[in-house]
Image 1: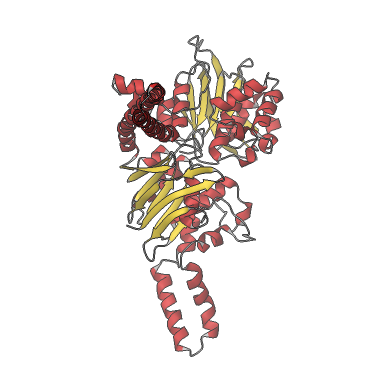
Image 2: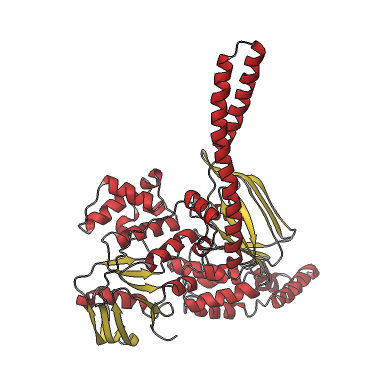
Length: 551
């Protein structure tokens, strides 16, 4: 065992976020961490790194354990380059480098320093640090970050910084790596490389992710739910099966509690009546005591919050009728997506492109793209980061005046049905809304599009997408990644679109929300253009694959 974690209480003001977190991690074990948005997964990582000490419990690591983590915030880095930042995260590198670089000038005949210098040279070689800079630069290239090694880290985009964090972890040679949403900005090739490393890495890993391709490769999954942790042996498929069984048992227990509450309420009334009718002091005391015992048990049971019940769609379809009825009654609230699902599909062409070549300078990013997308169909744009997928989408959306988008059309033609309504899901929230409260952002987004909006409509939308009243007053900038993703879904569907354009829609969404998105898209009657590096999502949505750039 490399780590033993217990959190008996973690609160934010009056709200208790965690009350029963308890699990351990074995040497070399790969553990996925899942849970609904907002349950405290990133907070847990803050506790494990020691950044958050305001909790009750214990985090015990085996002696000598080196723990590394992917940082979400980067401050006070000055002019440190990407290479320097990655190297600074390698245990021993800075210390050994300092000895090797400075001792020759100062050690003279000091045998102690000579010995330290010799040991440092040997250790530096043993750790492979002489080749490390070349390896890191090669890794940066593999992750679509060519030429950034000597750029200042502060100049990178948020997505690029996340990729650098993953590369830092990969080269850290630590005993335990804490990795938060590692694949969100990776293309399909970079993600395959990360998964290959995950499977062969010697270090133990705790990975917060809802990427099912990653979860398919872990040894165990820990779910954070209702303030507690539940451990499931095996990968994602094993988790789904075990979760369906355990959720069935939990629903039985909860139903028994509900029945017991009804019985206790009736008993309290009965004892109260019997007490009032009695004339014998001993009998009065007897019924008073029974009433008090029943009231106490009733209060204890009513104080228990309803557990969160979620079973994946496929497992839910295979439940027996009794458990299925329980699940319909008790299942956790999920996002509700209102997508057009009528069957009057005309199959007319919505998007068409022939021999399309686009770029920004004197050379095209890609050549000879042909598109024929009709109502009711799905189409995937597949390619490496930087291959031109986003450029192609921008060209399609700005087809009337491509030059205004800054894109150069080298060859080919684009046509788009001029009467269709388009909904676009984007990775980043527009700066226009970023500093507004959620409810003000929803209102402005509708008004900007000349769409009717009211307070009741805003409240309904917030409820459909699992926001509470407090969230409505919170600036978008302070919402979690999952909450921002749900705002983007609201924005995409505001105009009842006939064509959806999705750019990595599963990033930041939790597993139930991803499944609801897939279910809604399966019954959607419009057309879908999408970019996704989520293998499960691609298998679910299907459609023709358009390769953008080299495979």
